[in-house]
Amino acid sequence: MSDNRNIAAAIEACYDAAFEFRQWPAALQMLAHSLAATSCVIRTCDPTHPFRSDQRSPTALRPDSTEHAEFAALWIERIEGAPDPHERRPRKRLAKLTDSFVVEDEITTRDEREVLPYYQEIARPGDREWWAAIDFMVKDRRWMLSMFRDAHKGPFYRNEAEDFLAIVPSMVRIISAAEKVWETAVEPNLAILDRMGSAALLLNCRGRVTRYNKHAEALLGTGLVIHGGRLRAADRPSDSRLQKLIAGVVSQCGDLSDGEPVLIAREGSPWLLAEAMAMTSFVHDLFNGGDALLYFTDLVAEPALPKQLIRHAFQLTAAETRLACRLADGRGIGAASSALGIGRETARTQLRAIFSKTSTGSQAELAKLLSRYQGSSTH
Image (cartoon, rainbow, N blue to C red; front, top):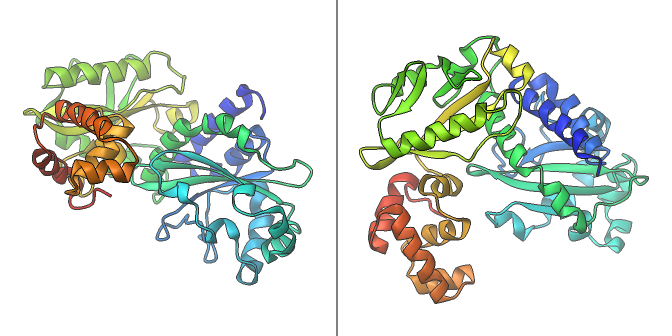
């Protein structure tokens, strides 16, 4: 892997590309080079999404790196007779909540690569003999950064996992922002914010609100107010969390650091999840000002809140989130602990923490609470 400066520059380019689709090829090629890959693409496991893994019916624009174009054309031309094992072979880790790094040797063996049509007709002729992917969740959708190397660069190895997974937090924030604008035409004004599906506000480097969209305007006066140019929450603990989030994201203008999402409560109940993202210089110019973007997920209106937002909404650990969602399905603690592969005492300890954080006192109360945010889908 290259030094961190190259990776940081590539990540910044990807932040810019999230708001201007035409920048994706160059940004992803920078990322590929920084990760010692020949090319890379962004795909999702969602078969209904335009950027799904199966691109036999490709969209006109795709988040592919510049040097992936020729290989993509070859893939489309020959894939019917040479199935891609990376898509067809089950990967159990994809069902997990955690992020993962998968390499070629976990998909096929050396002997298989000598005979499978994909390698004979696509991978080798296309100079993409080696593959690896970083899998990660963005809300309720699983995404992957698929990376390719030619024979000269050689294979990806499992012992590289820690280095590759280090970029996951940045990729999650980039895709989260990109999903909101991928289907819209970028305009150099607030129209892009109005087209976002969630409330969004632009902040300057002092944390003051400069502009906001119509969705944010609808929230003002119902638990959120702008006082002295600053966004404040009526609920005191929520306001403390919000101010800490804002202070963190604007503390170093131009830095891409940001904090964990924070919960905003109203009348004692979870209401909004606030997230913040620092702006790059390109996005600053795109919006004609603004140093940070603050946006909200409505926890009440969201028809099916993903596990990761449940986790942030109640400040649960990953283990507590998994147990809470199992129990919300109506399973007893014995069945839930068995399914998760943990002991009963461990499950009881986690359950006490869950009750405390969600202000519930029984499994029935917990199930009722979570049903408000996930409907009937807590799997």
